[in-house]
Length: 245
Ligand code: F6R
Image (cartoon, rainbow, N blue to C red; front, side, top):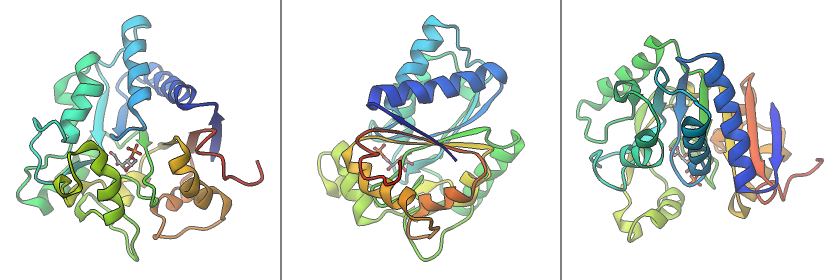
């Protein structure tokens, strides 16, 4: 595991974007796994800047997003589809046919999810997977549980997650209660994983993740410790409860 502690959100975002850009420059048809939420917005902004000012070319890049709220249509401003176009895809030269985001309208959900994982395989697997972390340790929407599901699947969101995500909605009862998410196995198959964490709100979960030499499904992010190529980039606030630095 590689750990970078950057001064603040902006420095964390720049570091993450730098690594993304290096990878895209090494392999123009890179397969990216992408996340939504507050954490990656700065990274996406920096990638947009690099696309405009430094010829960072997305024309062959392929993307797979981690998750989508179940029941939301892609044109719903709260959907993760909408988020990705607003915050990245509309501003870089990516080809729309290379973008994959779970569809919140999917009906035959079991087959739909199987097909999502098959598509990832068809492109040769994810080269670089970007992750945020929930305050409860979730990655994607793999919520803390006794058992975790390997492949892409439909899941119930926990109260913690609904509460945390209600900041994007008018009220908590408008937050969808289910989501389609890549499974823990879909994530762990990525060749490289980059986890970002920013702000005081993430200090406790990052301490739980990094201070204890433990793997548990009740902290899904801890499974990342078993992956051979994980880079964690966090800011000083998120790192404020780490021991032995
Ligand atoms: C988003 C996702 C989630 C978020 C996590 C942190 O696609 O999969 O796991 O990464 O909830 O969200 P923020 O960044 O808003 O704190």
